[in-house]
Length: 231
Ligand SMILES: Nc1ncnc2c1ncn2[C@@H]1O[C@H](COP(=O)(O)OP(=O)(O)OP(=O)(O)O)[C@@H](O)[C@H]1O
Ligand SMILES: [Mg+2]
Image 1 (tube, rainbow, N blue to C red):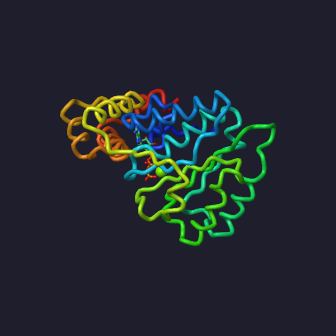
Image 2: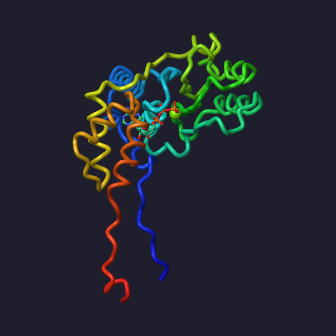
Image 3: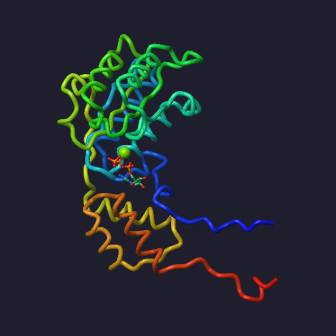
């Protein structure tokens, strides 16, 4: 029987799965929870949103948790992401608009589209996005993640609510790090953890990279004893 390689840790293992696992970002998360309550109460659709902040502080994580909470078992069908490496030509954006005009199946009120690094959309693609953001035309809630707000056209900005995502304070970073540590077999002493907090400058993605570097260099997978391996 082929042997199964041991499961290895990588940054993807630390993706928050619930709002509670997104550390810091309290203002943004509180507003997302309110929009969800509004959607659940049935009278309002969440607004289009811009998640603005530096890389690695939880924007994509929050977009995915929000979609999971809002759509539940419709997630697979009604949530889509457009990444920088996807086709983001004006034509591709126009196809999104066409989709937005079609009601979701089963009478669902809306679908959710997350566009990552939206500021990298060309000006032409940003123009093509505008009709999709017009509520009368659209059954989609758009989330645009950006590092630089100024690069988004003003008409796009003004059709969205802006949620700010910020670098974490040191005490929040300690919490994020201790939660991440619990998902590893590592034991790292406080001086190492404190140096990670310092080096990562409030960016959890950086902290997790350092955690894997420090822990991975100190720990190894227990090897089977030679009598067991020779069978
Ligand atoms: N606020 C946070 N709380 C807990 N973990 C976080 C947080 N922010 C980021 N992380 C960790 O960093 C990883 C990357 O975060 P994420 O992809 O959400 O960043 P981003 O803000 O979308 O970055 P980018 O601007 O580069 O797209 C997450 O999978 C998670 O492990
Ligand atoms: Mg992202």
